[in-house]
Image (cartoon, rainbow, N blue to C red):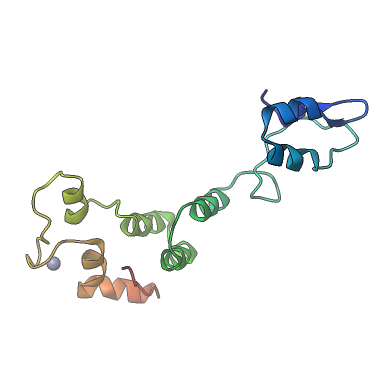
Amino acid sequence: MDWVSDLMLQNPNRWNRDIIYLIFVKEEADQIVSILIPTTNQPNKVVWFKENSGIYSVKSGYKLLLDLSNVNVNEKKLFKQIWSLMCPSKIHILMWKFVKNFIPIYQNLHFRRLITDNKCLRCRLVCESSTHAIQDYLIVAEVWSKLNVQCQIQ
Ligand SMILES: [Zn+2]
């Protein structure tokens, strides 16, 4: 069974209730059979439900992932700010990687047991975390300021 139409009967078009109630739990089956079916036959096609056009977009896929993940509200606000910036997409991706701890800074390398010491090479005082790398240095803070992004990562 590959298509929704495999769950339908024709002439007249209707749900195949026997199969639906056999395959799905009652609550799901009830929801399925409550959906109206077109009276005329339609060709099968793949539709992305998060876009009115039915065509997948990276934006809507990303939004769905955010909704499904347990990203906190502050992170969502930050991601929204990042993705709304008028800058090349590689900059968006770099900032997103920083927020998600995907950048090979010492803290992340240490967490993955690739190095033994997570101290920042510049100051040798604290762990080189994302926050330390993107907030604590004057030149980096200047970049954020020019991009009009308020960085409040916890
Ligand atoms: Zn440092």
